[in-house]
Image (tube, rainbow, N blue to C red; front, side):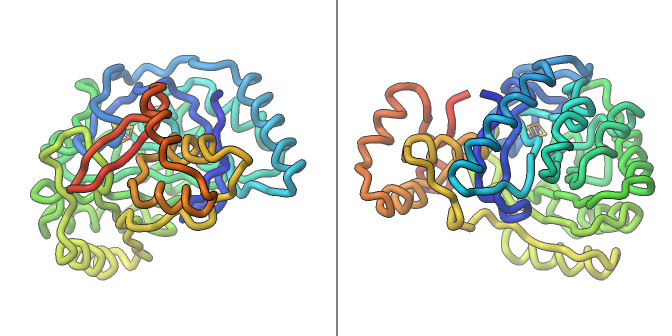
Length: 312
Ligand code: SF4
């Protein structure tokens, strides 16, 4: 299945995820990536799935939701890799438009210097671009990009895109302790955001098991100082996502296992969140150990807490 959900999203409401990239194919290998290190590093766009297959799955999914008296707020391209590597992205958006569900793409922006990528993203209603650093060396340390990428091209590509794009453009900045959370680095990001003027700048911290175990989330004091600095320098609306949100609002299907897999397809879930979901459904925790045994879920420890994520 290429589509999953809908899953609740703080920013997008009930969102049907589109996994248009096979795991884990990306142009970056971010130190904080919750999917682990990138094993298929590439910047060449290619076809991964037929756009018609995505269309057909979307049609079936919407029919199912209709039968259950439910709706979706967004189709979200948020795969286990970088969505713009999909050369059919624009064609897929064109095919999905008649369903009248808004379309979101969450991209690391690394290919935004390419005109065809800009054209594809122009078609989406909501686009999120990552800006983890505004200088080359910090960018290389945190995002560990493909060797052929140049940071300056990406920053210029984002600025150029922001001037023409008519949908909602937001940015995401992941703050990692000791890497990009110091004032000088945040100040440069703030200058960059001033040029882009997104509708909102989201500041995130790694909250789930990262690719590198040494990665630590930025301290609360660094977060508040970053928010203040970005607001002051750029005048942009800034919001922190600390990952401590629960899964309230999740629409359950008939199957607890399916619900848990849907959330785990998007991001690892903390054990206490799973416990809460099971309790609400009067379900037994053996369901989780069976899913681990069957290879559907895998277990991780991060910051002293146990997490589960979909096995990729
Ligand atoms: S966080 Fe996103 S951009 Fe970074 S390596 Fe993972 S999938 Fe790629």
